[in-house]
Length: 100
Image (cartoon, rainbow, N blue to C red; front, side):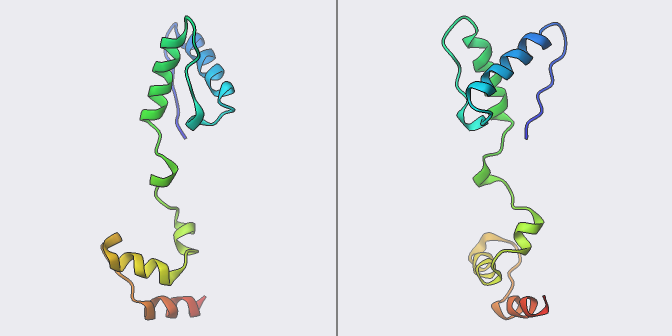
């Protein structure tokens, strides 16, 4: 989620431009494109601000709930390949699974 704050006299203009961009993209920030016309420059600036402050979903860190519900053997394998600083053995993973 990106929060865009507008301050000053241009707040109403930039807010309506942002709404127009999002409506055209069906509110998907990955599909935003500037429209041809006199306000193209303003739209490009707003889109670049949003893209600069957005983390792509594939790069977004997993939530605690998602990590806890993931496959422990697959997670242990990933950690043993250098994906994390501490590894968990398959035996420890199975023991944790049995405690649930």
